[in-house]
Every structure is written in structure tokens, then in C-alpha cells.
Image 1: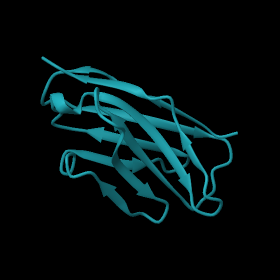
Image 2 (image 1 turned 120 degrees about the vertical axis):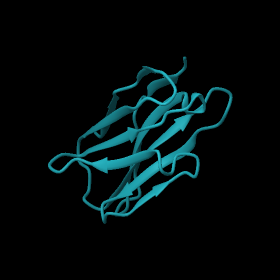
Image 3 (image 1 turned 30 degrees about the vertical axis):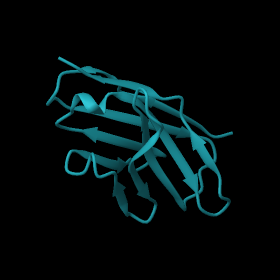
Length: 117
């Protein structure tokens, strides 16, 4: 029923910026948490940033001050603005939606971000 599609990944040089987008289709309840996770090569998947329907945001310490999560105004869409990218940011980035009312969790297929000179 619910599908998440990420876009915006690619190859950038250190210090440059990239913006990821995630579009959710299906029945997404209004009370939810949308976010981004990533899997760095050789490491386990980790939280990057989350945004609640109530307006609260949370960031991993490794991306604070550099990444910004935001939501679309009229659609079930979430964005991740990534600035000052580092080689350590290289990873597959996954969109996630978690509903509060019925405790459902949904994942996108991921988009690859490569930071290299």
C-alpha cells in the first residue's frame, strides 16, 4: 500500500551540497515520523535525521549543522538538504516513514550518495 521513492543521489566533491527527496504514496496517517537513514559501506544502517508531524526534528551528531530535514507543504514528501559533504557521508540513504497510531514502518529502496574528489 505505502511506497517510498527516493531521488537526488549522486556523485559530489567534498564540501559540496546535495538535496535528497522522498515521495510517499498510499495512506499515510497524519501522526507520523518521517526521516532519513543511511548505510555506510562496511557499517550498519544508522539514523541521519527525523521529522515528526508535530514539527520536531532530530539529527545524528555526525550531521548536525550540515544536514537539514524538511517536509513538503502539500504532499507526503520529505527532503534532506546536505551541505558541506564529507567522504564519510558516502552511503546509501534510505527514506523512512513510521506511523504513530498504528505502529507501521515503511522504507524506500535507497539512493546512493558518493562524496569523493
